[in-house]
Length: 461
Image (cartoon, rainbow, N blue to C red):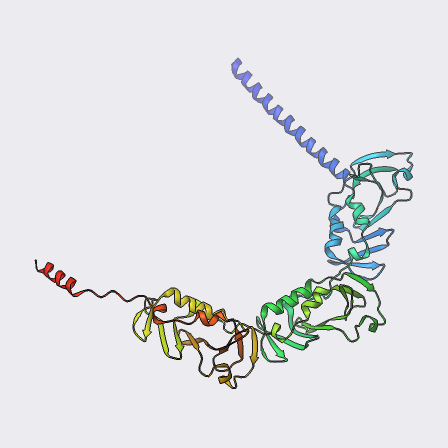
């Protein structure tokens, strides 16, 4: 009975120890949380900050819904990421160490007057962070909060933010638009005027000729425009655009954007060193853009038009014809999907060769456009091509490539009989000139007569 009582008391003691231990842990964690909260520089949720004022620059930022704007010294959109960088700092910025209190000579710390002020307007009211000199090691900055009679150290990130200029904080987007919402482009440059329209997922060149556009090139132009940033703001309210060459721009880009067909226009004027004067027609400032942007907008018809002659997948091809002046080969897949030569004689075809032919044809690109309409074909030896390759898939003609005579730039070529006549790489002809043995597997070796007789004798025995 005595042992039983002792065991119960031991168990009770163990429970009490656990309760005390975890109680201490909880109190310690709570104390730590309180200390961390008290050490935070700003005692509010940073997302509730709706105004930021930087002194002595006088930059005044205001949050309107989800967009930050600059009210002073000019009214313009702010760079969202730059402002969020400031706001995010207040999630972790702390008072690291109090270095002076009560009777303080604030001038000793660069705080009378302060070097910089950051004023925050938020859900709980207003806070002013006064920033002075850096500490001797340069690791922290001396600070004062809301005119308190106290100096403490805090992160130098606040000092970096307080030093930000109008250029640092303003939106430097050259032409704001969403790339996937653009449906029309009109581009004027030294090569002429080019009009493009989007039809589904493809781009069509409408002027100066009507043809398919080079999708990757159009996408590249839109990406460069969307990502372009002003290098410097020259004049906030430009009155005389002529002095910047913007009344008769070097380059003009007009975009039609969105369901409401909104117009976005970028004007690029005179050159200044390695940059050009430019202006978004809907906004007042004149700014400078990098010459690389201007260079990439100086495209011509060849740059913008589609240069690939055919669009198909090589796996779609199930039969083909190779036509030469003195021979013709016809190949097709059988019911098992095995390539066979059908003409001029039946043999098993080299499957890898068939894939190579299809790959060569689908990879053909124009190096130069010679004539939009296929007239005087004899001039280019395209009336009687040196090679003609026809590829079919499921009974449908996928490609008809005709190769003619050589030129210094390559080989004259044409897709079908509709044109245009183009020049393609010179090695295209070599890649498509074959004999029967090139495309067909070797014939089975004939069985010798003597071997046949021996085989018959053996069977008889």
